[in-house]
Amino acid sequence: MKKFLSLLLAAILVMAMSTVVFADEVDLGMTGNGTVDLSSYTAGTIKVKAYRYQYVNADVDANWGVGGLCATGEWEVKKIEYTATLPSKPAEGDEFEFTWDIAAVKADLGDQPNVNFYNDMKVKSVVIVTEAGAAAAGDATPITAIAIIALASCAAMVVLRKREA
Image (cartoon, rainbow, N blue to C red; front, side, top):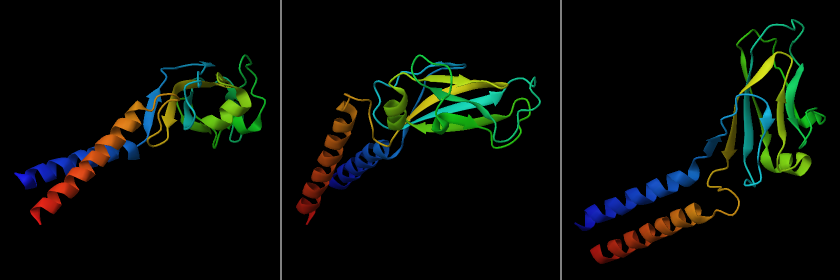
């Protein structure tokens, strides 16, 4: 019975720690240009997937600016570090992924930057990727619970091992 309990507690520990190791992704459900609310995030990245939805402008080529992130209330991408450029000349339907650091975006563009893509490109999805174990600002409950479960599991394993000896 002690060995079973020890294995059970070890499994709980592994499951609890695995939730801290892997990043969480929150799909914002955006399929076009719009405002992103970052006010509840302090770290992580914004991941935008865009695709060439039409082939009107044949000049769109590698290194072209096709949009990116703009300051709150604006639609013009003014900062080069938030400009999305193409790595190759896209065919219709080609997809590209662009990522930006949330902390930097908030510092430069505010809590609610705009996602704006153009030059035959359209937003397919916008995803917030939180760093491993990071919760939204002000919500430490899941992390605290995981830490308590992990520590309790470790303590129980130590106690059981000492009793077996």
